Length: 250
Image (tube, rainbow, N blue to C red; front, side, top):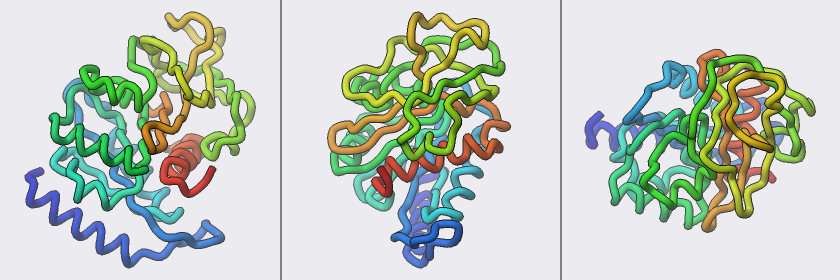
């Protein structure tokens, strides 16, 4: 997608956002907000990306935000990012932003913007230390897709309030190079006794959030398969994450 087409689509998106009214099921309408869903890949490309973008768009229309999905990194300018409350990295991989685009994203977060990383957002931008701090952890390896049990250790967060204490689902379970540290709020861990192939020692984080240089950042390890985005519980997990990152709920 070239820059001019991206700008035209952004203008159309912004006009629609300004005209939008919050539909049901949100009982107390709030000001609509924009969400940038970024899906550029410079490595492995997940077949689930279309299902993921469709999911974010649909849950947005039902819950008071509008999603704009693109693979074009030209959107990473101050003026363009100012149209959004949240940036979602949906199964991004590799080195996807140049220096100027990285700087624009840093300014966006420092101005109070939100970030949601889904699955291989942790397999992205290894040479950008600031991003490593934002996403919280970086991909190491994974076993085959299989069922596992998740321990929902914090059920007070909007992304987890609807979940049981133990959540059984199928996905590709990442091991990370190191555990998220600092002020990270750990939300969910994997019970490694319920699946095979993990190389993580001790606690195995799989979803977390934190405030980062003025903004809010959330990461979930789920989302490898298209089927994941059709699961009601996973969709509500993402909805809570996006609303939290936008500062619409605590």
